[in-house]
Image (cartoon, rainbow, N blue to C red; front, side, top):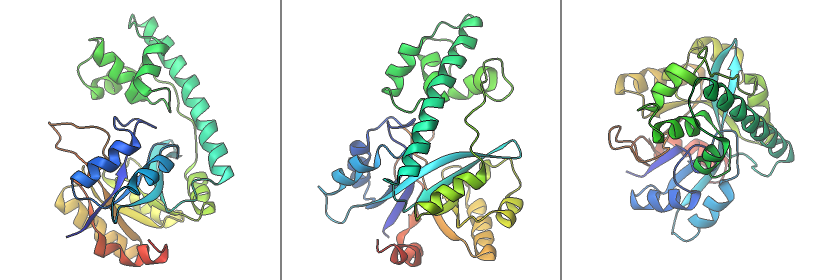
Length: 273
């Protein structure tokens, strides 16, 4: 069975592998169709596409994962088959990148006031100077012995309503969907199991094209339920590992959660992929 992994992060956001390393790892795992879906950036797509040309029958779908807000709840949207050189998209992602940098400085100041001694220099070294996210801050906190897990950082310090929390860039769900569609892509609801907002309400009220049925957080019964919902709403079905880095305890790697390419034939033919 030929599989696709359509949810992968790289060092351009909060992943640990470069786009080229992602391609090499996908080939090693016999995954020949992937999508780079870094958070709020398309910076890694060109490198991944160029690297994929070294291998036979390897394809990269240009993608992105937007963090949007609906009724004060976070909703992640995956954009696939996007024109990643669209000037409006580039301007938006640059704006978000700048905001992320300023947000990180504010979080660090709050942590410093809590006697947690971390610096912006350390965060930039962890993030390779690219799109800074809270996971980068959490990793530095782990390295310096303040916490043991990323979840601990979010639960006790940098998560919503915690002492060092700073609000993210507020991209509405409509704005995220509109920019994806303007870039000729499809807007897919990411990892619905993690949603805090009502799923049916989102599908009833917004122009969402697909749903991520298969994900590393989904059990078989979850995926079965989401397949039924996709059929009810006539949505595209996608799937992916949400790979960020090698984690022996979770068992997540490229292709560990995936979708059968045959089940995507209609979508792939639409985009001549």
